[in-house]
Length: 115
Image (cartoon, rainbow, N blue to C red; front, side):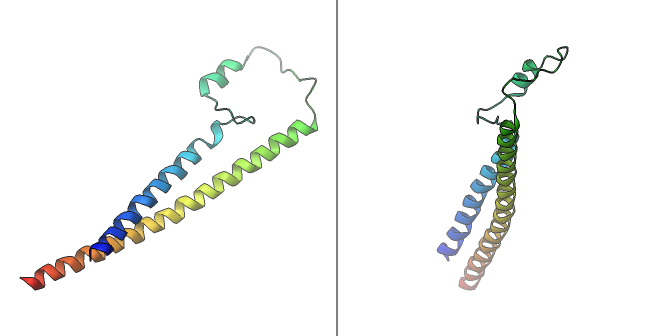
């Protein structure tokens, strides 16, 4: 009986950790630059000069657009993978809670029968 309850608790704990990890990855998915450095909102706002006309870099070409596009696709795939993992772990969490409930009810039944 103890192993059933422990299995349920371990399932709850592990899925909870994975849910937190996936949620963190989803939340921080759009805070990374192309080079992978973390960006803060203040840094992005401060780097924008609203009054200046748009500047084109002499090095801008189709290749950098392709890199940005590939990075965007990779980011979208990571978000999708994390969303799928989030849903899967939510189901595992629910199943583990049911295992724990059944174990608790069985233990309660055994205690009632003993009296």
